[in-house]
Length: 371
Image: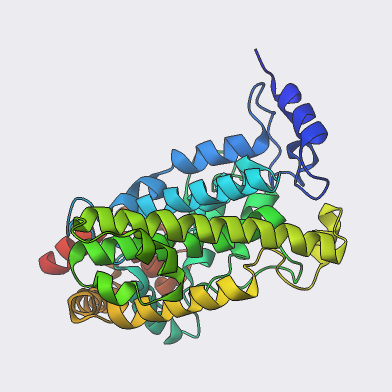
């Protein structure tokens, strides 16, 4: 059998000098005996997968409201795709795949129901109390405090590097406030971009499947140039979608890996500390592919995210979250008992925020109708 020490030795021998090694982790807030067969990041991944917040992601909106259709992405399938892209790119760059996977699986645990519209609504409510809502900060709060697996501490007691990756997750939609000004690990930086690759790819798929996006419009984008050449007259819509996805995804993944390696060599990066202390994100697309990606993002924003069919659900979700917040804040006795118990030590708006942010779309809608 392969022991944890064997795995840790393999990492030291095989992984890049600037990769995070499990045996060199900065550890957990609360000391625990090591697992005999799993590294610390493998345990973190497993703790995320087995927590309640992770299971609830299956009932949370990605773009379409959860339950809209069997084949559209939920927040859970999005997180799984982010973890898959993150792990693949980490392997290409000889980084710690387990760390990348753990961060990818955990990065959206704190997301509200109803997608980014839900986050905006929650932020508006929190601003009334001189506070804010950012779902990556809520993800950190979930794994650091709200989940429960031990009577000796709150939260999941994850390793420092996973927590650091959650608090420094940066995309077009994510801007959490970190606890220091250092850059995160290269594994965490890879997951930042893997998040963008995942949502761009699956939103193309979901948008075309729904009929909101039109293949002819999409093929005018530079990023779809190779797909346009592959598609033949008479190809069914599902084949056309596959041609697009099978060209766009490898283009983004391979460019990210190659350009990140180029950045590392050009900057002379050889250690983990050099990653932390470097002023900019090293995991980045090349300039031509970055330009293509921005064109795609703008296209999706205009044609998909702001489409009437999607906006209608967004507006409904915002109404539900704001109404639930106002109602429960005004009458805290309507909160479940475990949340009422926290009112002795925490402010009302924080407790209400935690309760609503943890809901699935379906539960929020049901509670809204009942109240």
